[in-house]
Length: 287
Image (cartoon, rainbow, N blue to C red; front, top):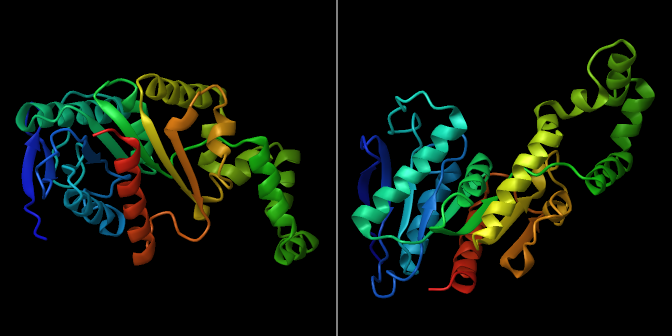
């Protein structure tokens, strides 16, 4: 089945470059939400392992209009000229893209798809725009929880290599203790690195408010966590435990995949996640 993809320049300056993959079967597509795939980090609009291309084409075959576009300064999109901070600029880019799709294509409702930083941008934006009705979040940022640490250290304790390193004085635990006793970084900082920022009260509150706002505007959530990101999350319910104040109810589908990596490198993993998104969209988001 052929796919007729089209380049679309978006925003007031036409500075954002996107690829529109129209629904192959147009009948009924007007009632379905348009799926918009966001950048992950600095990877341009094809996505990690070209997964964004694969996803958009598969969704078009199922009757969904799908769009993948580059944020300002990534891929073919020009940098912003208004001096906005990085997050504010990203949120402005998403709004400008949706505004253009509404004005030029008549799109009224949207589902945002994001991997890693793209997932974080999606959930932060969603609560600010009632046109967004669904979120597909692949490995979003989740603060650590007590159960996370229990799992983390229990798994380490079962590894023979960890015990051998402790006996030899080579384990990171010794380094952390030495740094603490010497007035260096705390053990948590030595082991977590940049991850420590997510566990600050400010970061937790910011993310909690983002999920609360997205839930309050009626969004449905598909969240897929991969086991390769063990330093970020290591069990299925970590999102629920990290944000117990968010009443997700039956609008959350939460999965933890033990057998894939963060960027869904194997072809089978990409096919699996694309199929899961298709099934979820048809079941969770009213047409």
